[in-house]
Length: 145
Image (cartoon, rainbow, N blue to C red):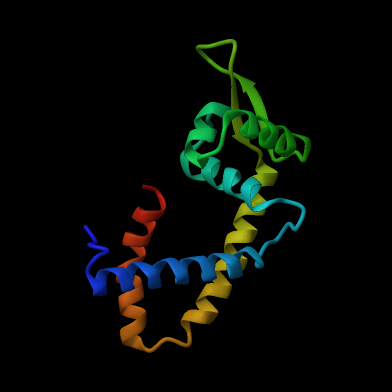
């Protein structure tokens, strides 16, 4: 566990935070559909990764309040990107599923963002690229804690 009172750990955490935020901001500009908010794109990404879910489950995964998720799901449904189906066990709930249109848009978005990142990575030397490849699973884990 990082010790923020230790200079090297504190500097590494600060550098990581700064780099992740800067890359995130730049990646957000590589969107395919400008009409979707970053939160709407994130919800679609969660559905793609985790499969169908109730609005409450999505709210927990996205760290937003349930009423906010209900609004987001309604916007996505109006845009034809998700559909609401009856919950198989609890008739009071709905299950949110992404549509084929959402899947295609997400794939196009991934391709565009991956190409942009690959362009940046092309400027790294072999040692830097190797360290980045090794760090990718750790960054993925951090993103989902």
